[in-house]
Length: 275
Ligand code: HH2
Image (cartoon, rainbow, N blue to C red; front, top):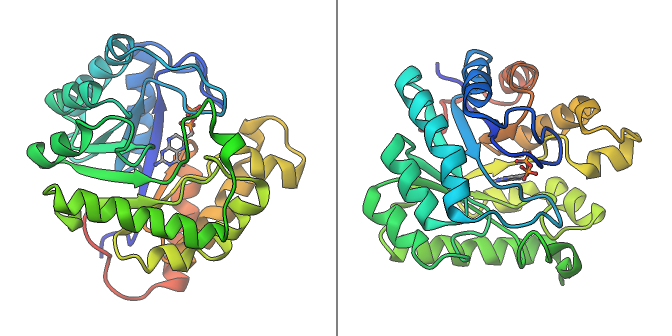
């Protein structure tokens, strides 16, 4: 039986990502890291060339392309069974990544920042993740204001899914993500995880990205993001129990094994579809 979850390994080709900025900034190091993550159990590799941490400066499209395209090309040649995702909000970057071998577009703006993104994903038959965020990474934390955060995120994602489907993206190719840490306070993040089943009820596969994020450090007192693996595992296991299916993480091996064990306890039915 295939795993009832997919681990998405993070390959940040950036100098400034919040937890591993600069570690894999260079084609060779990033490709080596991607190969290691695949060997550790990643079914999807998410290659990004622009940090989305709060306050991050935007990266011009040509620079983002220069970072991600050679990495995706090399990984596609070496890993035919791994889904390659590009983490971008720019259609030009997504188009070049799809040409280079990616088949999945992870757009933290829910395909709202670039009007060319939805038609591109539809035309190219790609899969995608629609994430909830308000504003952009420079401004988002000031916009963490909701009536009921779960109701508001759910309504937003339902609207983005409907727009994507009406533009021609089949629903089976869409994942949704509540956007942990994006325009959210500590309590918003915890409430979304507590009531994740309400996001799962929207229908598409749910992706969660809690890996090493600051809300974990606020609870555990771990200031160094690399010290937040235990918190990452706890949140991913709880999310699996609530019905999430895709887990975006830095520490693939440990999270994969934790999810594999948890899945044997919480799920006995068939896998929820593609990776
Ligand atoms: N989080 C980050 C980036 N992309 N995509 C999705 N779908 N969901 C997430 O939660 C998510 C995401 C932030 O993490 P990271 O890539 O490690 O940091 P940075 O944006 O600083 O590169």
